[in-house]
Every structure is written in C-alpha cells, then in structure tokens.
Image (cartoon, rainbow, N blue to C red; front, top):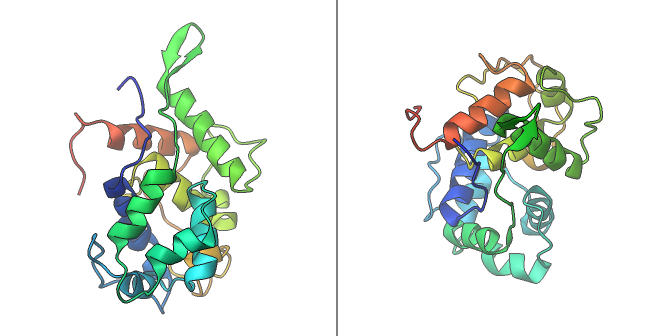
Length: 219
C-alpha cells in the first residue's frame, strides 16, 4: 500500500460511529449494545445506543472530533428532532465538510515509509485534541494513553482507520480512570486488554493493514 486515503465519505463516517459503538457502549451501563447502527437509525436511537449528550453539547464534540467548525444551526438541522433525523443526515453533513488529507509516505533513511507518515499524522490528530505527544514514539505503549485519553484515542484512530476494526480484542472490567467526554463512561475501574495491539507501532501497522483493499477482511 503506497498511500493512506483519507477523504471520508458518509459510509466511512457511519463505520466510525459503528466501531465506536462496538468498543465503547459495553463500558456504559446506560448505553444499549443491542442497537444495530445504520443510515436509517434515528438520532434518538443513536443517542440511546451510545448514551450520548443532548444535541447542543454533542454538536460541539462532533466539531472537535472531526476538526469541523459547523454552526449550531447546521448541527441542529440534522440532530433535531431526534426521532425524525437519521444517521444518514449526520454522516452526510460531516462528510461534506470534514477535510482529512491523504497520507503519503515520507522519506526515512532514503526509503519511502508510509508507517512513519501515518504515525506522524496520528500524533498530529491527537495533539489537535489536546493530547500531550511530545514524548510519543512508535514503541510507546498505548495503555497509558487509553487510560488518560480514551475518547481522543478511539476517535482519532477510528478516523485514520476509516471505521475499520483496529482492535480485534478490547476487553475490560471497569473504567473509572478513563476520561468521560463524548463517550460518557460511568463504569468502575478496570484494566484494558487490547490483544496484540500494544504499542503505537502496532496501531499504525493495523491502520495501514485495514485500509489496504487487498488485505484479507477481518470479522
């Protein structure tokens, strides 16, 4: 794979929301893990599925997650009335306004390296969300960052992965140590188990793999 395409369409946005629901909703006893998200899902059901905020604070968070500057009126037009508006409208609004450039390889020791470019891009996205990344290296363990910046990590990894599954394993027993933010986590404290994805290098390699149209699909 020579590049990592990043312009997101409405289906990519929907897949990001689906993956966030898969990972995050089991952490919140007020969320509904049984709801299956699709374009026809109402905003009301989406909010129940994820135990999300009301439309105004949710709109502010979505602006931050997708690096947007949409007005409250623009968000209100797709988030209310919640029982009539659908995820298709939300996803199309985001896709029409978000701008994530295609990630191209950088030169590293005379060689073209996509992994380095993806790592730098992930650092940039996390920094934009307020995460301290000055000491972040490919070998850095992801566990402390998930503990301290759970919301930002899941959203920005999901954006680079275009909603494809990065964490095949994501087990937990409690979450009191995680920042709540958009994900509204309320469960007691646990350690997170992320399977073979232990470092930022692992995350980057998996992001590239799941974006490769020639790689075998993962369930």
